[in-house]
Length: 475
Ligand code: ARG
Ligand code: ZN
Image 1 (tube, protein in one colour):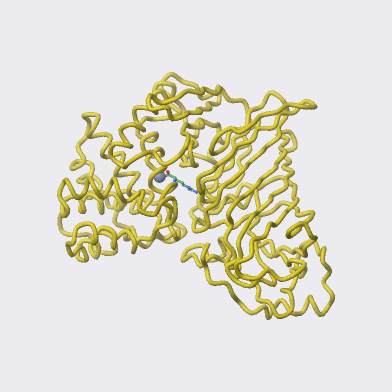
Image 2 (cartoon, rainbow, N blue to C red):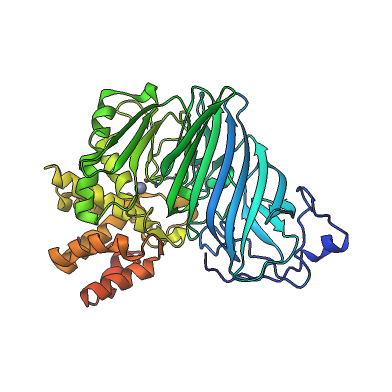
């Protein structure tokens, strides 16, 4: 989204001279050159922590994913139709894709050249794409999708579950199951259709737009009409007990639980979704999406271990022992629908805007429930040495989900409450999520928003709590 392209395609010149053909199919040395006289799109979106995540030169507006999955062999076969607008002249462009085999790439229906370079799928269109033009890339691919290991040692991408699979993509795991512009700065709408053997269920983001059965298979079509970052896209395939209902306000809920994780504590927690959403809407403003829910899945033991705020319906790992879903975690993941899913970080270094707010939401909820006060949560975060390893505004890729991002991030909000007072702080919590209307926001935009809201000089507060290395003497 909105990134200046462009890099002169020096290293790309040679294959053209050697006559690299339109259907070169990947492997070392097979990356196609840019069309003569036109620049190659940049192979990264400019992220400070994940330089090769996403790409420059175009903005995706829609993903149409037509997939088929067979849990036995673990084989995924698919066609991705990616609608985009060029933000620069393009003689070549990159998509992100980790593993899998690409069979055919077309641009606007015409065969395109393609090659692989690490997690870049390099595409040479049959003719140059000019800045401002809309175009569609079609990618046919198949293979056994990978489980990826993150710089922090955790896993993401494609988790096989015994009877199916679950896709989790934060920060850069969506490229394990579909080609795309895998960076939060490029949000898009989605149609995700997955065909599976009859008897299995597919749950994804957005709303279920259709379901059809033929030849011993069932295809589930999920549609996401609000912009979504790639890392929030999910599919959960397997045996699920599905409960469809509505909140008292009429919001459709779709909750899918792996029967093996259907313990009484989890069922009791999930029944509180309407109440939690109503409370969060009161504090953070109207719920931003057309439906909500949850997915409780069995991730392979030792490989999952975290919940993820996948858009509309977060995924919870159901294999850690009962309850599979705790109310505090539910509050956290649902609050991400405002903080992360609706207003999305512009760069992975802004991750505290997600996790600091979601942690603060948990603190507020505990207080609301008559449990620990926000002041006591803040005091305990302040006292924990783990929270002071680095400032919330400058995590590294290996520490993206560490305590300073969560707890020190929440302490920034605690300090803002003190500085702003009750009224202005309540306004901040209600207006910030909507300020970017489903787009992206950076830390700098957040601090500017706070300053604008209050007219106060908050520079010292942010210097200490958000950017400062040293632990202040007291809370
Ligand atoms: N955003 C998740 C949360 O709600 C955590 C995701 C962790 N991801 C990872 N690859 N370790 O806190
Ligand atoms: Zn979180």
